[in-house]
Image (cartoon, rainbow, N blue to C red; front, side):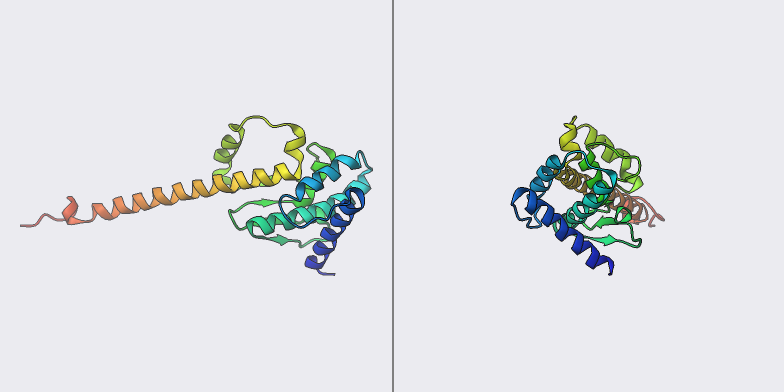
Length: 192
């Protein structure tokens, strides 16, 4: 089975889990993540094996919701769903949806799972500072998939603002360099 088919199959499994537990149909919207988060709150403490299966399904669903909202694509080169990443189009961000789902299930950072959001290194410090200045959030919200999607949205806005500022600075620098070569601006050879 190819990766796209496996992702689709896992996302459908997530829908089945939520339907059986809550009698609610997932529709692929950002709002549907509230039902996924509620389902997570009901499953309680599970074995690592069950958690890995559920995280794979919920992570596939979460990745599909993020792609539908922001544009992007999966990268699933290995067989292990925990290694799969999504790269968003709205800004150059990358994350492991299954890792985020695993952390949502356990409600904490997990040593063997990658639940982080990767920002290009040039903007890491600025993004971290801006997110920290937003103030503290409750752990339940921080680890929830709804919270993670909202953090992505805020991070996309921040990265795009940083990109815009960089472009303005580069344009101003280029205009300044061009102006220094313009004889009418005091540069170049004097006219006799």
